[in-house]
Image (cartoon, rainbow, N blue to C red; front, side):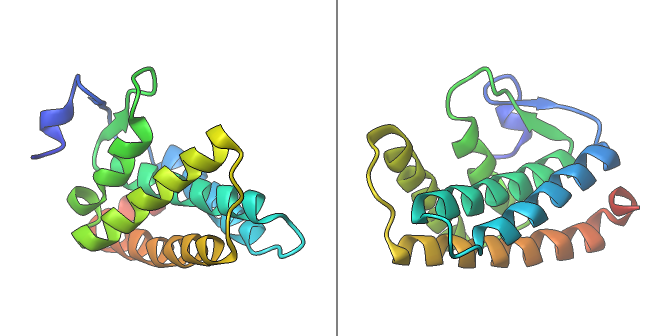
Length: 146
């Protein structure tokens, strides 16, 4: 499967926009910081860390010249599952991020509480993805960071 195969199904081709990518990375940086505020509830911290993951994954997807069709269901899943094709993260990491997506859906739509362990896992994944996306952008698309 390639990203091109998903055009029209869940993605659309776009020209990479360095301004949009820098905004997404700045938002992800803010959300990573906010997620570490221990005075917030676990649910807020988890949601904020997850949001940072989505912003970083979206920045990588846009750097490759694609964006999700948010009018269609499953755009969060597509963004996360595109990470091995964009940044080259291992499949196991993508599976972990996808399980965090599922956990976020459960918390959002059922009101379930988020455990300390889930918050910690999401924070760790957000930090690791931050490093991976930024390293990848510097290596593969440095012009988008200028």
